Length: 64
Image 1 (cartoon, rainbow, N blue to C red):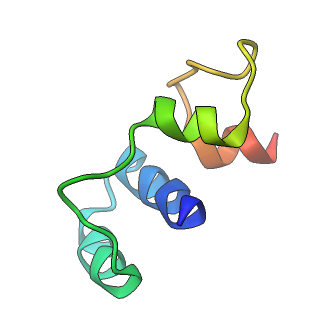
Image 2 (cartoon, rainbow, N blue to C red):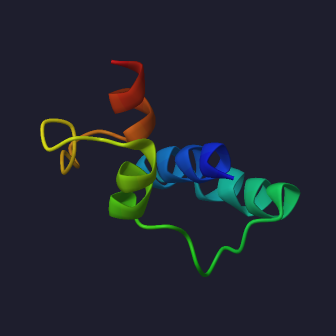
């Protein structure tokens, strides 16, 4: 589910609202209760150096 949450955060970051309307039901993830970015960072084991940078989506941070 963390993969789906990361993709959802990416779509939200780039305001891909129409894609989100399809993605959330297809992945069976609740659209009203997404994980926060901080929760995802904690689950992924981000240290202080990677955590908190909201200038780019989490997926991009992971790829870098």
